[in-house]
Each structure stands twice: as C-alpha cells, then as structure tokens.
Length: 552
Image (cartoon, rainbow, N blue to C red; front, side, top):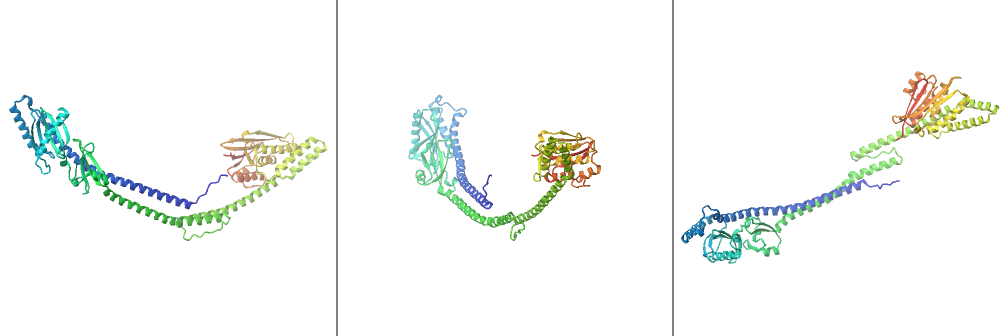
C-alpha cells in the first residue's frame, strides 16, 4: 500500500504567503537596482545629449572654417599663380588677405587666417582681436614656422587638414590647405573651444576638458586639473569625439550627485522591506484567526463523525460563512449516512427475506418424494447403476440448492447444476424432454445470480409440461450492445397476457403467486445488478429474456 505524506494546509498557506512576499521583495530589490541603473543611464544620457549638441555645433564651426578656405580651390576663375607676374601675384595675395579680414568676422572660434608662400617664404595673416582669444605677435610668427615644419615633414600633398600643435604653452588647432602653390590656413586655440560648464551640466562642481584621440589632456575648465581630480575622486565622465578634428570633449560630474539619488532609492527599498516583514507577521496572525482556527473546528467535526458520533453538533459561533457552509454540508452528509445505514440494513433484511422465500420455493416435497419413489422402484428392479447416478445427481442438486452463502455463479456452473436437475426430471419423464443449447463460449465465466437458469427451467416444468407431450427447451446466450443476453424458450402455450403486462411493468409484484420463482429472480437481479433487465414474452411458447451489463 502506497502511503502519501500528509501536510498541514495552514503551514502550506503560510509558506506560500511568505514565499510570495519574499518573491515580491526580490522583485522590488531587483526593480530598485534596475531603477538605480536607469537613473544613472538617464543621468549620463542627459550629459551625453548636451555634449552631442555642443560637439555638433563645434564641428559645424570647424567645418565652416575649413569650407571658407576650401572655397578658394573650387572658386571659378581662380588664377594659377605660377602663370602670373610678380606684381599680379602680390595683388592677388593682397586680395586674399582682404577676403580673410571680412570672413574671420563670421567664423566662430577662429583666431586667425593666413596665406603662406613657401617658395618665397612670405607670410600674410589676419587675426581676431577678441579678448577671449589672447595671442601674441610671437605666437602668430611661430605659426608660420610650424606650418613650414609640417610641410617639410609630411610633404605638400599630405599635410592638408586639422593638426594639433603647442605654441607658447598653449594648444592650437591648425587647419592647412594647399592650393595653387600656396598654403591657406587657420588657427584655433583649444581653450576657446571649451564652453561654460553650466551649458553642459547643472552642477557647478563639474568640469570640462579636451583631449586628443590618444587621451592626452589639451585644455580644461578654469581652475580644473582633470588628471588630479579623476585620480583622487570618483566622477561620472561622458565623452564625445569630434568628427571634424582630432579632439575629444569630456564632461565629468562628481558621483556624489548620482549617489544622492541612489540613497533615496535605498531608503525606499529599506522601508518597503520593513513594511513587508510587518505584513508577514500580521498575515500570520490573520491566517491563524481566519483559517487555522476554523479549519481546526472542521477537523474536530470530521473526527467526531469518523469515531461514529454522527449526532455531534458543532458550535458555529464566530465562524466565517465558508466554515458554516462546510459544517452544514458535513451535518447533511451525516444525516445521509444515517439514512444510508438504515437503507442498507433494510436491504439486508429484504435480501434475507428473498433468500428465505427462494429456499422455500426450492424445497419442493412433492419433487423430492417423486424422486425417492422413483429410486424405490429402481431398487425393486435392481437397477443399481441408475440408482447410483440418480442419488449422485440428487445429492449434487440438494447441495447447490441449499447453499445460501454463494450469491452468484458462472454460466458454466449454472449449466452443470441444470444438468443434474434435468437428469432427475428425465427419470420421471423419459423420452419427453429435449434441451437445446446455443451458447457464446466467451460468456462461460460470466457471473449471474445463483440458480437463475434452474428456476426458469423449473417454471417451464410447472407451467409448460403436458402429459405425454414432448417438451422442448432452448437456452441461448449472446453478447448484444455490450450486454450479456440470456434467453430461455419453451414450446408450451406461453404466458398469459395479463401476467406479461403486470410483470413487465411491475416486475417485483408476486401477482397470483403462481410465478413466485420469476419474481424471486427479478428481485435478486435488482439487488445484485440494478442495471439489469428481465422481460417476459411469447414466441411459439414462453420466452424469458435477461440482460446484464458486461464488466468494464
């Protein structure tokens, strides 16, 4: 026998509730971490967006500077300096410098434009006198030397573009463009490219700095030392590279501003955890009052009923409606059980009464006396062999008839017992009885109420046998629509119409008392198998048809 481990529903509910609460706490914790991550992502994304906007604007300024110089290459009708005389070349240079003076006013961040004739080592320039772009005469002259050295190092065909150079302790961006035998160029101080900190970060202690593509520091916000600050404190740094020049602009904000936001989230998480723990304690108390105590009362009721105290009445005071319904259902079940016990007891009494009736029906003194008289005649005639056979059949017949402990028997056993009965009857009515069998071998082990077939055949001998008239009995078994069908047919005059109508409509009614055996069979079928049926009919004689459902 397999034993299943029992469990407490209250403990299970408490465990489920605690698990759900811990699961929710885990979700809150993970969500808080995710929120912190999102806050940091949004924090850096906002800085990145502001940085991108400024870098796009800066790239546009640098592109306008390079485009203003590049226009001399694509300008229609631009003369070839090599084909001009010295006077024309001088005037052409003067015109270009004059153009520079007009253009520089419209070029943001541009500190100077120049034209350099490397062949004649002549250098002309214009510069921006803005106080935001302090520069010395010496610086402007060093630009010429720097351009000359770049041309010597890289060659005329490869030096075009923006170059980073250090002049007088400051970093500059130099743009060089070789056209028509001359070098057109511009210079921009990296210090002038840094915007105000307030334009990119709402925190006054943030700072900006420029680096080259290798990460070397170029310029930074006034009073800021990026190398020292980033090595001694924790900052959130966002960077954006320029698409026009070899520059990277970065903004660094102290992580304390992010941690301030995070501390609020942590306090919220701790508060939620404490609230959840208090909720678990309150819920456990509520579970005890709302579920455990009512369940204990229900278990007490069930225990009383299990012990046989079906009259026990529980106290429903203060119980929830669900428990009241359960107690009412249990009380109703208790009442039904009591009624069923009474019904079973009455059914047992009824079965005993039927068995007594059947026993009285089977013990037929006239039949036994006739057989004994027949045996006496055989003794006088010294037919010892027949006497032995008759006594054996009579003994077996009486044994099966008087055995009230067996309620059902197989068809095979029933037919064997029937042969004992027929043997005794053939002694009384020699050459008058014919029995035909049409049996389904698959039904040999099918069980029916004991002595059913013999009772049907006895009824035939009682009502269908005529003196000196042959009696033909046919016994058939078959399977039809998943039911076993047993039919017993004789060649007598059949059942009276009144008997058939009364029996088929009210099979348990004894009627005139002449067919008590049929009523007895019907009653035993109802007790053993309520789904069975028994029908009387006429077809060149009386026919009794019994059907029972097949097992399974």
